[in-house]
Image 1 (cartoon, protein in one colour):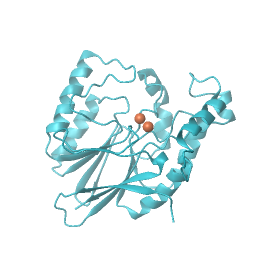
Image 2: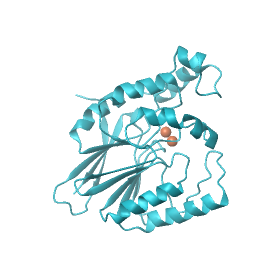
Image 3: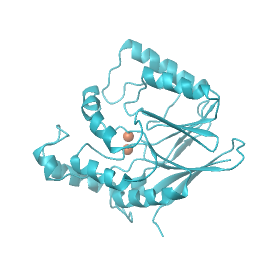
Amino acid sequence: MNHLKTDTVNLHLGLEKPVRILQLTDVHISLADERDVKKPLLTTVKEPLEFAAKRRSVFFGQGRERDPIGYFQEAMEYSKEFDCTVITGDLIDFNSWANYDCVKEILAGKDYLFTPGSHEFCPNYFEAKARHMDAVQSIFRGNILFESRVVGGVNVVAMDNSYYMWTEEQMELMKTEIARGLPILLFCHVPIRGEYHPQGGGLQLSEDLLKLNIEFNQLLQDESLIKAVFCGHMHTAQHYLGSSPKPCYIMPSLFTGVVGEIVID
Ligand SMILES: [Fe+2]
Ligand SMILES: [Fe+2]
C-alpha cells in the first residue's frame, strides 16, 4: 500500500497495445550535511544546514503523509509497473552533497529518463549551470540534456529546458527524432506556451540564441508528430489542452504525493 495519488492523462494515438508512462516531477529534496558546511556547492547560501531545514519545511507538513523523499521512494517502487518512467526535474531543491547522495541511492539500479528542472542548476545563471553540470550529470543515467526512447511505438523524448531555453544541439537532435516518423511525447521541465520567452530567471540570451529559441518553439508547436508536451515546474495540475496547437499537460509536484500516469492507446 503506498500513499501516492495519481493525475491521469489518456491519449489516443491508435496503438496496437496500450503504453503506460509514469511521470514524476518536482520532488524538491532538500538535504545538507557537514560536507555542505565544509565545501558548499551552493555558494550563495551562508548556513547550509539551516537553509536545508527551512526548505524542507516548505515541502513537508500541511497534512502530507510522507516527506518528499518518502514519496519519491514510493514512486520509484511504483515505476516498476510502468513501461517507462520520466522524471521532469526539480528532483533536488538545491545543489548539495547530501542531495546528490540521496538521489543516487534511490535511483541505483532503476530505469528512467531524466530531464533537469530550474532547481538542479540554481541559481539560474549560465555560470551556475556550467559549474554544476558534470556533478548533476553523474547522478543520472542517460544524457540529461536530451534523451529518447521508443516504447511500444511511441517515441518518448526528454529535453532539458531548465533555463527556459533550448540549444542548437537540441534542435538538431529533435529533428533527428522527428525523422524517425514515430509519434513523439515531449517531456521537459518548464511549460511551453504560445508566446514563449526564454529570458527567465535572470538569463540574458544573445540575439542568435533568442532567434533560435523562437524558431525551435515554432517547430515544436507546428510538428504534427509531436503529440503532447508534459511538464512540471508549476507544482499544480494544469492541462492546457486547447490553449496552443500542442496539448500541454503540467503535472502536479510529487512533494504533494501526486504522480502522473499517462496511458496511450
Ligand atoms: Fe519545482
Ligand atoms: Fe522549476
